[in-house]
Amino acid sequence: MKHNIFIVFLSLLLFLSGRGVVFGQSARAYVDQLDKNAVYESKKGNYPLAFQYINKAIEIQPKRMDLYYHRAMIIGRAGDYGKAIIEFSRFVSNKKFPHAVRLRADCYMAIGMYERAVKDYLSFLKDAPRDGKVWSYLAEACFLVGNTKAALEAVQKGLAIRSHWSDRLRILHEQIISGKQIVPHKPLTN
Image: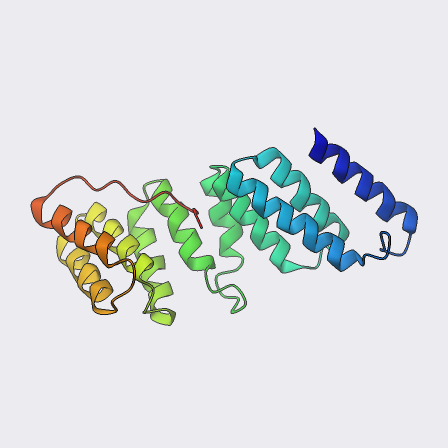
């Protein structure tokens, strides 16, 4: 409730200023704060408030692609993976958003579309081969597709870079070798 009053108050001040300034604050700074609040609230699981913040920011500066990107993240975190896939797809070929393909892969994982997740994780790793976390995600996806050989190769490539994800990769290696169930990671957690 307190956040809603804050948004309404700041929106009213921005509207009344007529020049995009709130007590010396530029429209850009105001929108940046709304965006920051949206991301923060989404990480806490407060999606309705996160959507209020991000939608208000987009309303004020509709040409800022980063705001739509953050909204895609909020949509995914809220569990609407199908819609998040559509939204992230808008950014996959945009070099300013290199993680879009990985985040879309996370959404594919969440809805059990493991083959598509594998494709996206591989695409991401072409440009970021030193990302141990994504090697572990790829290993999960390959295993869940039924490709044990590719899963073990992903583990080995991930271990070769000696990232702080090595412990997770070793655990995955054991699970794959022993045929234990692998529960996919929680999507969009970062």
